[in-house]
Amino acid sequence: MGRHFGDLAKIRHIVTYSLSPFEQRAFTNFFSKGIPNVWRRFSGSFFKVAPPLVLTYLIYSWGNSVHEQSMRKNPADYANDE
Image (cartoon, rainbow, N blue to C red; front, top):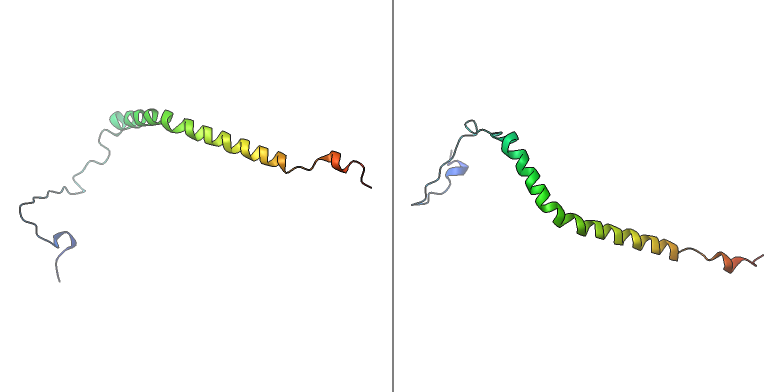
């Protein structure tokens, strides 16, 4: 009934290998190498990413507070109204 999806084209001089999913070890060295690698990558990029994010948050919150202060009405303008 036709060819399988992986065998649609035959390319000469190119050899491909595959490993069955049942023969792979998915969590090999997960605790001994995986967790230290995550920590190394996190600590290496944290100090590059966090300062701009903190600065952006501080500028945004300052801008919102200045906007809220500028939208307030001055009570002295309405002191003598009746």
